[in-house]
Length: 104
Image (cartoon, rainbow, N blue to C red; front, side, top):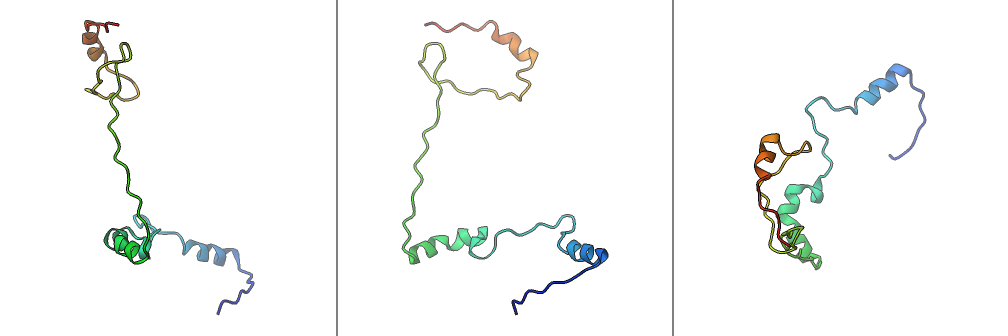
């Protein structure tokens, strides 16, 4: 009925009650439910927005980022390989030494 009461518990009883809130392994706590659940949003959010007459902001299209050559600032660079934090392997660096330098 919404009444608050103060209780004195033994250590064992407190730990038992507290442990009831711990989820077993492989269980996932549900954070969003109702109209916040992802399945509900996908299905009915647009309908709800229409009924509430909410103006939906459309996302602007992102222009692709095409970096320019760091030397001459012309042309577009295209990614041909991505390396991890350790950088390119030694065999990869061997062939790049013979590349033609940028003309300014």
